[in-house]
Length: 403
Image (cartoon, rainbow, N blue to C red; front, side, top):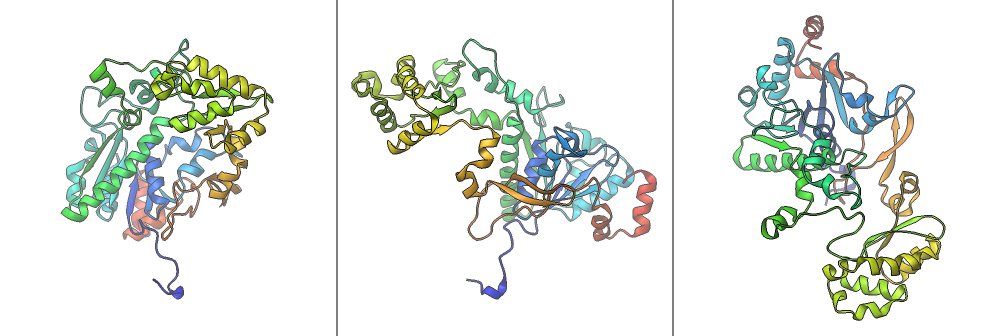
């Protein structure tokens, strides 16, 4: 074990150099996740067209709040990659980087002379991570792609919503966020391979794919049974009771009975133990076929009691339940507080702000939010000076419009 004088160990991704060339939202969030655990992330933005996330969603005093989260732990520089000086500077940055994350349409980097051949020649150990809506090949590869399209095309929207209602899209970047998690995993996998081979490679991440993975066995069901997942509202084909229920004080709770033992505890709690002896109750699918009867039993019991009493009774019975929260409840919940899931961070422009903490806890080498999203181009001169450019070089690039 290190001596106390040695200080805390470096974060696990310390020394990993990442160039974030991407915008809205999967690629940049993947870079954020790497930066949270110590990667040295440099955010590269166009000099005259900043990352749109700076102006996406609500702002305070003209300062975009989403960027404070998405841009945390990143140094920010400006660079016009389509300009000769910008191209040459990017190649110099790439020569000293481990990872580039980009989300231009396929062929764009190649048009600027920054394709895989040029980048690999500049740095054979580089991992080029390409995050696009539809991937680098196939008939849709050159289409503009956003998370909303992935949510629609994956089958997520078709399976979400009430049975008699329309397909339903999430009101936030679900597909992008799932793709960001998958991208950070892909980057670390490619880096692990580099340890063995000494060579970098291209990561091809299509946003339409990770969300398809989290939908579970739907392709397998269709392949083997011809079964197409219908919209079921809050119900499940795999178990029941599973729904949201209104309490006497006009709150909502969610109940899950994925485990047989939990389903039995719920029935005893709500005063319907006789249902446990029904032959169909013995399996999740059997219970799902009798969801109306089970929902009536559970819903009627919950409707006669306030939420606090319902939650306490379920907890005592060791049955699975959770209150349905909005963000106000999340911010006040004692479990989230204990985990520090939403943590306080000091921001030079806004003072103390609260945002989601790093994604998980490591006992020996934890991640950290070192700073929030910085102003557009705030670190350009510092980063380029560290690269070896002189003040005259930087001034010349600005004159050319490359910075």
